[in-house]
Image 1 (cartoon, helix red, strand yellow):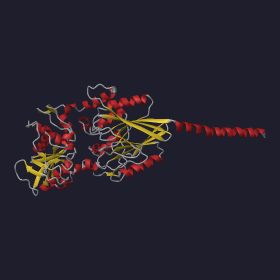
Image 2 (tube, rainbow, N blue to C red; image 1 turned 60 degrees about the vertical axis):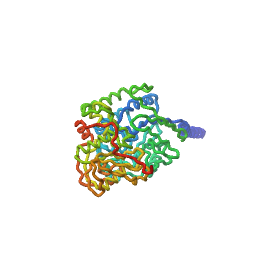
Image 3 (cartoon, helix red, strand yellow; image 1 turned 90 degrees about the vertical axis):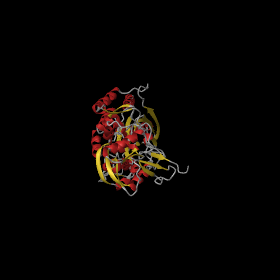
Image 4 (cartoon, rainbow, N blue to C red; image 1 turned 180 degrees about the vertical axis):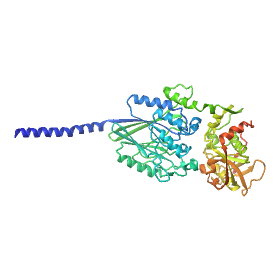
Length: 493
């Protein structure tokens, strides 16, 4: 009997031991602090200058045994010469080399078409995430989320993109896409990732600041983007063109989350910096750039002065470069007048010999020029729309050739009393049909130019980059000052 009692006590002690020890481990785990560093960037538009430094940051942290995620918040796969000529592949190769964890597509990542973006996603060693971007069958175009396991701590990252992509991209490219409501999608993703047992939830969002629905919802710990939100989410963004690298430091302890965001400036050329670049990434970038050098090094013309293509300039007024570009569109097509949006012009051209590389940097989208027959009233509406946001610098700001026009910036948008004068002295007639040169992006209603869809008889020509290069070969007169093609005149003065 005694032996049986002893055996029972021993069994009970062993059973209690099995229960208590895991409980002690759980309590210890609950008392521990989990740390995660998120390195992020956005809107680089094909630029790779930050990548050697991002690689060094990530490698140094990982060498110390720290947990790291590398995230890209979109507009990565288009914009620079090497990137464009490889149709995005060169950037993907570099991102793979650096070791990115996830990316969300921005509007310019669709520039080569949906099928090409799918091909690029297949080349990525990391997921391209978009929870609210659906195909024509209402199926996710790309995975909605991914979960990272850091020794039992689970980090859920979901992708979400702005429906503005339908306006900012060539309508012919994105016509088959459906964008679900961002707020509804964000809530659904939080619920799903919480069900999956995620300890932290990150929204990798390409949303921006312009009239975008607030995606914030309780349960999102960090939003990698620039959208203004409330409540408990930390929002982080790095600006554009890879000038800064974002760093978010997160700590999770006893269910409480603390987070701090900061940015690190990417050193400019010949600038001394504490952070050393990764030489392997520098070599990879040079390797990709060398592949396109035979194209980009060709001299196509020359200019005695700077041709102004600065972003804030071409989106608020005419410049000598915008005039040269629109003139080249008339020259290439034989149309008397032309227009283009300032958002299609992305760089200045320095005085001296002009290479094809500089042309492609100034006009990175290489949009096809088209002629279209437009009624004068529709052209007038396009001009009103092109200056409706003035003086705010916006991509839709219109640049013209063959006409001069003035508007009242103090009047209500779309009612700014635009007055048009033909450069040849003829009277502008709202009832007349004019043959106008523009780019296919605008002819398809891109950037909000829906009134252009009323036009007819669309005829395609070469790309605007090719036209500008060919026009420069004719040695056109290059003027330093604008020609008063666009005038903002306060009628009350």
